[in-house]
Image (cartoon, rainbow, N blue to C red):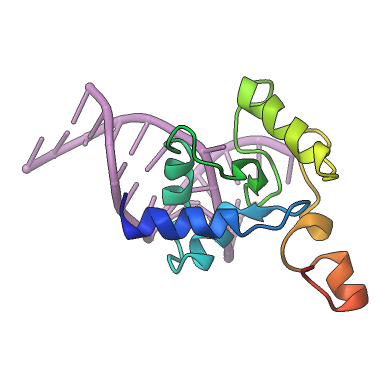
Length: 113
DNA sequence: TACTTGACCGTAT
DNA sequence: CATACGGCCAAGT
């Protein structure tokens, strides 16, 4: 396990429950701008047993990154909805659940809890 | 070594 | 909404 992986996993673990973040945002937050693909690759190699809110990571469009209907896709949708995140047609409205530019921030000026 | 793949992204058409 | 293009780059062939 190298530093890069550690930082990326940390960035993912830092996403608050009920919120989601894009691959690019995670990469940037880990100090690796432009390396969203690396994030995606790592998510496919998460060590067994490691606790990680992988399901809170979506494409920049808000779409779930896995093939619609696949096992992972359904699992991700289920977990997100369990946290109160709205998932419609495999997509989440980043305008409301994303880490930035969300409604709470706009109205109350309090991005995080 | 060379080429392909892929849980990606932003811009442009 | 869909396609195209250039970036990115570790792994697998």
